[in-house]
Length: 220
Picture (cartoon, helix red, strand yellow):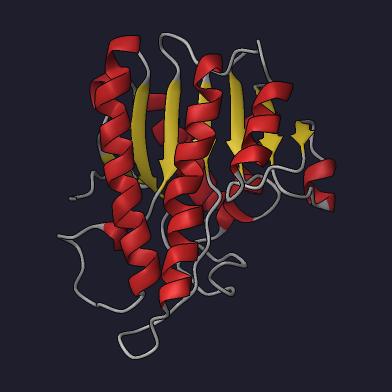
């Protein structure tokens, strides 16, 4: 049985990942700020009060998990506040970096003692953070924070490779969730299934790379 820790598990993609992974018989530790009714109905261990924007909150969660092995850490938590060149707000940019970039750094740093040789870390990024793939502009805060988290993932992959820990960036697709206000091209269950397939097949030989949930590798 593989032990997964999923941060941002109370709704959307995180909830669906928790559902599908637990239903196939693996152990899920579901980290979230506040559990949803749907999450509480799953056969998972729920750890509430985890705010990725608050270092003390993440540290307290890590203390509760002290001494417990984590085979796969999946960071899902994030925010999307749409903008364009004429509406971009510096405070929103700062908030986006706080959650989308520093959030994963906090969680991964605090849970590193739980990781071991052959552990895997997956960060849900977005192809909108790809410099080479940007052909539509806008979404300044979200794009910049996701480009930065891609660099975080690559940096971590270099520093953790000697420990046998892989770090891989994943794009979930354009998913119909609350974050996208119901717009999108795929449902959360389809996205989660693709993400799980990537998590199963990708390992240390792929560390520091960026993948679409459909199995295609993405450019930086």
